Length: 258
Ligand code: LHQ
Image (cartoon, rainbow, N blue to C red):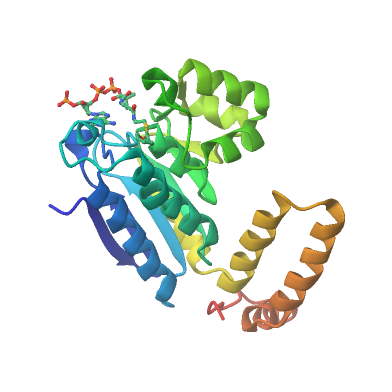
C-alpha cells in the first residue's frame, strides 16, 4: 500500500497519510512523497483546496522512530532540511487553502504539520503531543514558530517542555485549532469545509494566505503596504468582479478561481 493516498473529490485534493500500523509516522519515502503530492497540487488548476488527514486511529505520530534505528537511517542533518521543512514550507506557500482534519493523535512533527495548515479541525477524541521533549529533542517542523503565536508563549513553553497530551477540546479552547467536531461524522463535517473553500475565490484566498504570512513578521506600516499591494491584485481577479456582480443581481456567485 502507498504510504500516502491521494484522490480528487470535486475540486478538493484529499491527501491521506497511510501507515496506520505506525500511527502514520513519517519515514523518508513518505516525507518525500508528501512533498511531491503537494507540488502536484500546486500545479493543478483544477485543485482549489487541499484536505490533509490520516488513515486509522491516528493523524500522524511524527518521525518514524524505528527508521532512526536502521543502518541506512537518514541523518539528523537531513531529516529537517530534506523532510519536514520542505513540507511545512510548501503548506504555507501553496496558493490554495490547506485544511487539516486531525482524526486522531498528532505527535511530534505530525502535530506541527497540523498546526501550520490554514484551517485545522479535529475530531473530539483527537489529541496533540509535542513529543519531542520526551526523547530529548527540541520541537521542530515550524512548531516553535506557530504554537507560541497561536496560544501564547507560556502555554507553548509548558506544552513543549512537559510533552503533555492536549486533547482536542482543550486545544480548541486555547486557540490551537479552529473547530472540533464529534468523532461520528468528523470526516463528512470537515470535508464540508474543504468543499466550501474549493468553490470560493481561490486567488483571493491565496492572497489572504500570503498577507497573513507576511503579518507574522511585518511591522504595522509594512503590513498596511502589503494589504494595499495585495488588495489591488485581488481587485483584478475575475472572481472579485463576479462577487460584486452577483451581489448586485441578488444571486449566488459562480466563482471559478480565476
Ligand atoms: C510509532 C510511532 C513513531 C514509530 C507510534 N514511530 N512507530 C525531527 C528531527 C530528527 C529526528 C527525529 O524526528 C524529528 C521529528 C519528530 O517528529 S520527533 C518526534 C517523534 N515522535 C514521537 O516521539 C512520538 C512517539 N509516539 C508516541 O509518543 C505515542 O505513540 C503516541 C502519543 C503518538 C500515541 O500513543 P498511544 O495512543 O499510547 O499509542 P502507542 O504508543 O501504543 O502507538 C501505537 C503504535 O504506533 C505502536 O506500534 P505497536 O506495533 O506497538 O502497536 C507504536 O510503536 C507505533 N508508533 N508512534 N513515531
